[in-house]
Length: 318
Ligand code: NAD
Image (cartoon, rainbow, N blue to C red; front, top):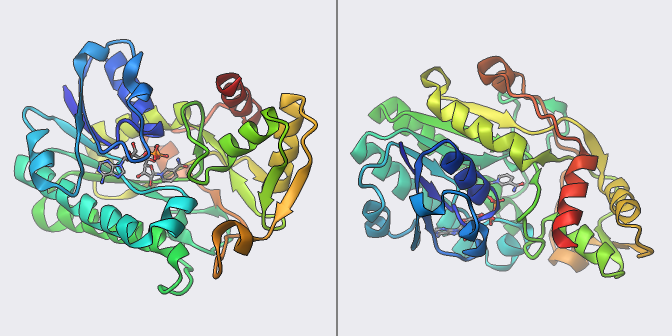
């Protein structure tokens, strides 16, 4: 098979590329390298079967130029990270809305199945322990920059769903909860690599907010095979799947675990949200997935614990 991965030079995309190459497929990556890096793809086994095209998903011609012979599309390209969304809100909104529609159009024209990466952020402030795919969304004001990422991703889901219903495009939507592991950058607001870098450098570990907020971290290597299995399964098409690890950790506890695992003496410092992200920032207290649907469909069950995740990230930064 030949697979197109938009955003394939990024963190999750490069692991997906590695996995698909390992299965013997050809891979085309379309990436504008805004947050992704060519180095993420450089040493991959089977790299000779991968073609990197530098271009934007907003450019319909660039997308079209990648489509020859493509059998499956994984649409991962997006403006991501809270720093990116808060700092370049309008540009991010355009990428996350327009880019998805452009890629869906290509899937429709070529009759190719497509997986669209969405996010647990669409649940917003719903703090249910075990969010199911049918849970209500509780989001703040559309005038708060912070929610524009969730708004765009929710509309992406609706678009993907309607391309399935009205045009017969074979679509799968995945809502990724915090996905972590090697190659993730800490520059755009992702908490695990940021804490690891601060801790290894002996700098203060900066916890934004009171540190009580609860998150669940899933190793990227648990997520990637599920993306492939879902898109390959015709019975999985036409709906949305949560993908995440239900192990809960508060951000304060995460900071302590990172410090202990690195043997660092960094102080742990709390920084108010306003100072970290600017005025009007709202966060979710808790975000915990229920992945029963993905388990029943493809047997999805994450096996890597937070300790394993932290070891792999620390090893990379060391
Ligand atoms: P990432 O920043 O490493 O990957 C995103 C990639 O998209 C980057 O390589 C970037 O250069 C590329 N990109 C951005 N704008 C583009 C454009 N206009 N045209 C082409 N390429 C463009 O982040 P990631 O964590 O690997 O995220 C991948 C996908 O997973 C995204 O859709 C993201 O919303 C989703 N997601 C990730 C997480 C997570 O915890 N990592 C959680 C929920 C959802």
